[in-house]
Image (cartoon, rainbow, N blue to C red; front, side, top):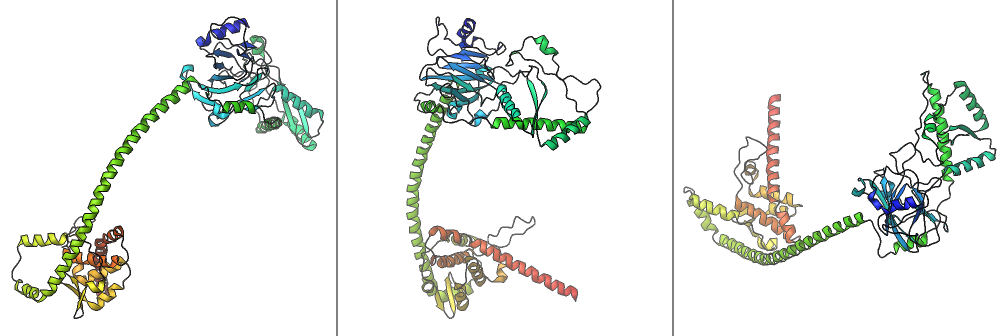
Length: 552
């Protein structure tokens, strides 16, 4: 006892796992520099019982302890299981246990699993709340994975037991098999298969009907199944072996000297025996008592803790993460404030722009009406001017100025009733800018459904198919063909007339400026599709003519 206590006083100065020799036995952990008898709150650890595992305990602080578990027998690299008791506690004493030498990188503790706990007054196993369990890689312990859990002791007279999961001991299994054997059931047979290196029984369980059992025994005798023997030479050299595997002993099978291979049927029989043994062990495990309501008071106490205790390393990581998030939040708030100011300024500009656009529309509408009145009054004079100017070509600067004015004349006049806006005279309808169409065709056009069909028919009425098939909307050569030759563009002032007619039609259906602008933006697309349809029909006609010529 004194020797173990002196080891605890040194704290974590001993940082190697190699000194772990056996389970702790009534081991009192004293603070550094303390001399005298243990007081209440100086925890006493014990793991010297069946299925117990705890090799060393280091006192870190008043609330924190580092626990080192022993490796499995015959497998020094595998360290997972722990099972120990704690006593001499104080009421409402809060602690953190760090299991610091886990060998697994992945564990169910990451997905919500928690260690088991029970006490003398509450003997039913209960899981610790998962929010008090942490599984992480710790740089202070060779970057091993550490499982930390917080717990609050609530009764001073109790002895608390902690385990990796529900323990199931070898003694309990033997008692269960003895009870089954005493029933003398016909379909159950228990035989001794051999002994382990620690002199424990290896049972062979057979569960089948009596007839099948006789057939199985006959087949086994015929095939002469041989079970490999266990070598115990190393056990004698290793010295005395305790009941709970305190000395690691290698388990070796003696090699067959004859070197003969067992038959395929022999392997199948052995696999069947092992499968039945595993199934029986699973049935015995399923009969364990399920956890009932226990440690509810302790769980509630942990849930209501105002100053929850967490590991130092985890606390520092959480603090750094919290500070970084605060800094990011400040930057985001500054960006949001800057964006809000920009949006307010843009809203003011849009409001001013909207007022200017509405005023511009009114001026364009007034300008168009004045042009129509002038064209009606000066119609004969314009015809005479055309006859005179046939032999005179206009100057390039005049043509350029006119084309620029035509290109910039894409305005959206205010909606006016169609019959009041367009002038009828001698069976013709004046669309504006000296463009006249047949009255009957115009009335048929007003009944047309859809913007696409309306625009295509109106383009044929204004230009005609002979003109459209040799023109393009923009006058730019297509990029789909390398050697494409650009065609002359359509007249800009006639394109503006098509847009105005479509605008008058749309304005009778809706007053939404966004929808009107979206539908007017497709005028060029509709006319381009019509030009492609005309050219396609012309090519088809040429193919038919050539086919007729070839037949003749």
